[in-house]
Length: 246
Image 1: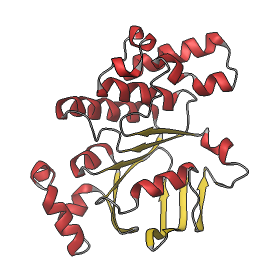
Image 2 (image 1 turned 135 degrees about the vertical axis):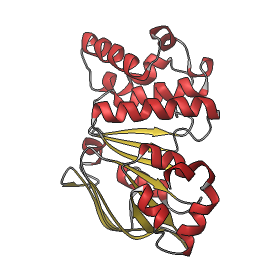
Image 3 (image 1 turned 90 degrees about the horizontal axis):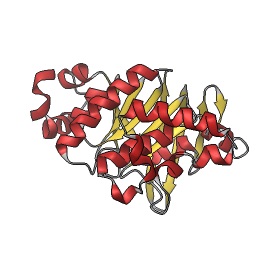
């Protein structure tokens, strides 16, 4: 569903992503993890078509992403960022219907979709007529997920969606996200700093360092057979919540 081939992206003297290749099968959830500045968010934005790579290619469902088709292919992808990225001057409902308004969806179709997604994401309908600033961080992220799912995209891209949320709320959202992924059978690429979260939500984990992939695979294989010293140190730094998975 997502194919990244030999992608390189350079900012001045800094190589954010270097000759990176990654394939994500349809219906799978892949967690991208690594230290700050390793290139994981840059890679996500390249896949979304928000920034261009210097070399290499991205294919979405077998179609190469270009300047000409980027808007069309972007509609196949839902995008959720840290803190939601909601427009504060719009109601939560208006945030969700931005694209459907642009595409001139029938009002009955929009209402049905809103109700469907509110139930899926456990959002009370009354919250939709409030503004983002009137909601908690966790509720804002649920609205952001509703917005990302409005067009029923084949792919969901999440860039540290739970990074700024209270731990207890984050735990509930993790459980709900996992249930949503399993129910919808979407292709999901998740960026996170948290190895426990990556393991809980992802079918496969991809560990990055300085724009390159250091190791990928299931959590148990990574814990038992780290590829190199960096992976071993990265795991050790976060191992305590993962002992039960070892």
